[in-house]
Length: 342
Image (cartoon, rainbow, N blue to C red):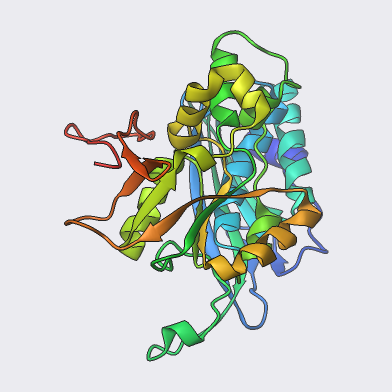
């Protein structure tokens, strides 16, 4: 049976001679990396645990793709260019067929987005995958006295302004329907909902295209309601969502019905679409910027001043406030948790 170093060399070590900024790759105690001139680093880490974040019996290539995709989505959410990744893989046993599929899914997505695997670790234990990604962003120093006068080519959660539109890319909710399909026994990986769950597409190109047009943003991992609440708290604003404007894909409607589709968009999670705020005058430019990517952009609400003591997400139907149902996913929900919009 191959040891851990042989497994790393066999499945994860690649020729990095042409990778930007890689001074020293795998094989030593640390990788050595250099950011480009005038650039700053964006760094994120995520752990995917079997049975929590992905089905342990899912195709190995899908697990490899998905593990990297959710990390690339964090770079997309800030408008960063992917550069380097670290992989810590915990395996209950050595199954080389599984490793071959996992590595194939991981490397295919990595190559598509130009991210180099520069190091990591393989160890024994319950199946889990931890990936750290590094990206680059322009280093822009803002004039603290005139923050509105400087275009900041970085997407953050705290930049929304009163009156900004709330927009979302693509077709959220599909992954939630895919999870339900998997749980009901569907194994057709060509099913569009199941594909959205097992092999999500990180919106890296969209983040790059929109980072100078949007005022704030993040990726939707836990449902629109819960994730928009993060922007509200960071920006100290509330948001009004119009239920009738939620993008409901035909496949999502067919799988869950209209009410179920809306619930999937609001609270389903695992979508990894970009949820953004932007000035209304930037909307047309944003739509045009996404057209070459064949990616839609839907206006679903507007940011507004806080009424009361706390920022909140408000659901409306033709301007009339509606009661919220359901709650976005949390790993450790507080015992006294209330709905996002309360």
